[in-house]
Amino acid sequence: MLLCLTVMPDTLSAPSPLPYTDTKPVGAADFYTAINATFRFIAHRCGREGLLRYWQELGSQYYAPVSTRWRTGGLPAVAAYWRAFFAAEPGAEVEVSELADEVCVRVKVCPAIKHLRAQGREIVPFFCQHCHFVSEAIAAPADLTVRVQGGNGSCVQRFVKRGGVTESQRMEDIATAS
Amino acid sequence: MMGCYDFCGHYEWTFGWLEELGGHALVRDYWLEAISQDSQTHAEELIVNHGIEGMRSYWEHTLAEEAAEHVMTATDAVYRIDMQQCPSKGFLIQNGLQQHRDYCDHCMGWIGPLMQKAGFVVDHEHNHCGQCWWEMRKADDPTPPSLPGELSGNNDVRLRADWKTPHTDHYERATDPDDKTTAA
Image (cartoon, rainbow over all chains, first blue to last red; front, side, top):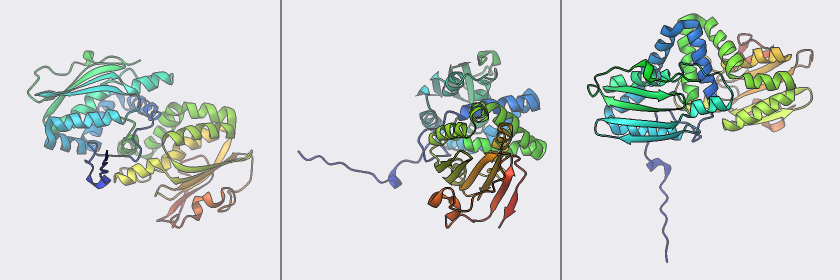
């Protein structure tokens, strides 16, 4: 029996759904402690208003290439992004579903909360809110909106076409982290 | 969600955001309070309590996790790192990201105050292209920085043909991120 294997050169592989790529496949979990500390520092120095501005500007500026991909690629690009994103986050357990009018990201195990707890860190109580505010700033230019339910280790994030939902995000639907 | 995979990208973006908001003083405070005294408390615990042995433990773990191409050299008196390819700066270069004027300063921004607390001073030089070297000695040890190749042999980054491009920033017996001189 003859077995033929075809090896595709890297130049033919599909481009990453992520706009910024690294040479290693998965990030270093210790960086979650810096993300948590950054939120604490900005909230302490700039207040909640400053922290919201930080999240919104990070979403609209640093993550602008993500918005562009979502705008041109629609919901398939949103689903591809989150699959690739969580594949590169150590310890994440996530299910991404592409539906007719939305992409649903079910975070069964949040890698950040998991790592911060394992390290015995004091997690800022508003940690999970960044997922809404950063993602909303990314989604808006792509004519999408985001609803987050849950948090503190597991949550559901829905990326919905604007007009597909009437109710706004309720902050009480996002759990306090601890 | 903000992830750890592209952490260096949004971390560097944050320096620029803070500088625009509160100037260089706010960026310095961020490196000190958020990174050195909050995020990196595990490093502080190791280094303040165990000195050079603690440095070995900390950087062996963290540089392996970050897949850094580097060489560590340790004696009873000095701890040296030759960073051949910094994964952090490398990520920024690879992705064309630059929001802050010198990303590399953040290392001295958090390591410097930690070393001061642990009773060490730092000789350090970075070339803004992903290569740097560090030597930590006790503050009461007057030994000057090693000559190229003296401590780490052929692994010394200063022996690289591309070391001096385009210019390097130097720290001598420092613990402050602004205590540097620049050489073309």
